[in-house]
Image (cartoon, rainbow, N blue to C red; front, side, top):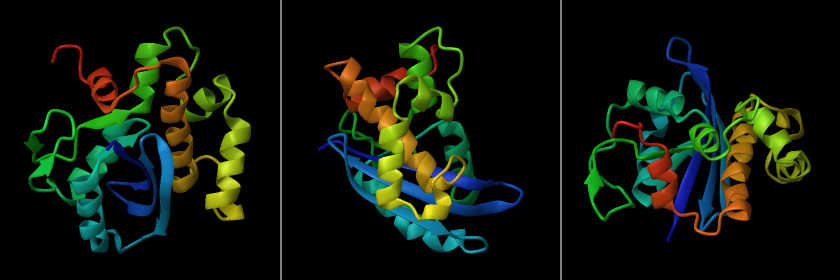
Length: 180
């Protein structure tokens, strides 16, 4: 079972997390979404994020941002499965970073920003249709957490159109630093 939770936070370490959007993929298909406004209450969501990490791995566009924000609030989820090699870890990772994956697989694009990748791979229409289904009408644009999480989820799904052997192992290996 391949479960990926795509996360997008709005906010910062200094100001706090004002909202989060989550898209859950199972075998690369959307099975759930969640959007929460959480100014001054993000700390109340620890159990939710622990349950997500127990059930799958995390993904984001520029994952070091989301990982850093999680670790700022909760340094570790405790012992959780890696979902890659049958082992466990005490980190929020391994992460799938769509920006890094696309940078490594599609060299030479002019930009690897979320909006630009969605446009480069002709995903705007599909993203808008998904957003109509899952987002409120006032949040159907970039820099809204659920919209951005949907865009990153589409980028993950798009990989299977280009590569027949997409797996958690391959995606996470593309996100490791070149020296590791």
